[in-house]
Structures are given as structure tokens and as C-alpha cells.
Image (tube, rainbow, N blue to C red):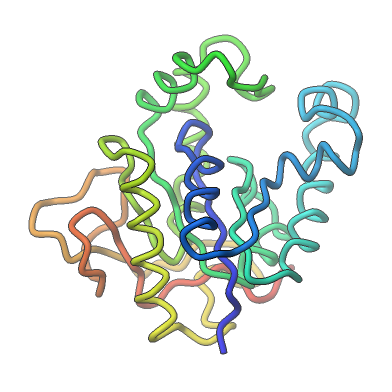
Length: 231
């Protein structure tokens, strides 16, 4: 039986924490935010960890936290934007159903700028829009390794949560077995493109069509998985 575990990935500003809480509430599952878990265990804010230890050390902490969360179920986990960039974190993500909340850099910057409660994000210091564009270019192939994707730019949080739950229900009826990975020991994304059942063309930042999802805004990959193994 496939684990009752959902990981949300994507750029900062995509609403992973907000959506994660809504999805957990709908399913009656536990919710965890990986950045909050890192801060709890380190007893320091993420920004301070970056400043004092550097990004590499932060990513090691992140992978350790995700490995711990990957032992719990049922759970919805909102991950940090860079979680899929390391093999250790991808290994943890491969233990569950991974959903990419695909937000455009422009919309992500708008959302982050409009929310006064947005915590400091070390990788977005300065021109957030420009930094998000660069991060998207660096990470989008990794995000494409997710099991499903939702274009969230024009959706309200409740709508996105509904999409995630619907995709999970579709997936659990016919999941890929662990090990059918789109990212193997090399950590490189699988070349086979995913897609969608929507009638209109999807956003250029999302995978190309070829899936079994019945949603007009979401993509369910029939063949791709995060690594069940890691280099």
C-alpha cells in the first residue's frame, strides 16, 4: 500500500504552507512545515542558519528533517523551495506523493511582497522577482520530477487544496510502485514528459500534456517519480 504522505514542492510564494494546512484539514492528517521543523530543531531562524552556516549546511539540516518526516503518516509536508535540489531530500520526497505547486516568478514575487507576515528568505534578498526568475530556471527540471503539478497563479488557496486532494485520490487508486523513479542515482530528471488532460494548452512553465488527471488545472504524471534511491 502506498504511504499516506503528501509533499508539496515549488518556489517560495506558491502557497505551500497555506495549502498544506488546508489539505491536511480536509484529509484529517498531520501537517508539517519543513522550514518550521528546521527552526525548531536548530532553535534558530532559517535566515540565521544561512548566515552563520551557509546554504550547504542548511540543506543538510533540511534533508535530515525530511528524512524524519518521511517516517510519519498520514502527513502533509510543505517543503522549502530548494528541497528537491539535494539527493538526500529527493530520497525523502520519493517516499510519498509529490505535488508541485507551480507559480510564476512574477506572481510569487507579487504575493511575497503583498504579505507583511512573509518571513525573511535569504535566497530572495534584494530584487525578489529577479532572484525568483533565477531560482525557477535552476530548479524547474527538478520540480518536473513531481508526481503531479498544479498551476496556482489564478487559483485561491481553497481551490488549490481541492485540486491536491483530488489528485491524491486519483493517485492512490493507481499509484506507481516505489522505485519507478524519474530521478535515479544520477539525480537527473527522467526524459519522458508528463502532461495533462486539460483542453487548453498548459502554461509553458508546466509539464507538457499526457496524463490521466480529470482536473482542468492539474497534471498527474503517469510515469515519473522522485528517486527511491540516492547517490
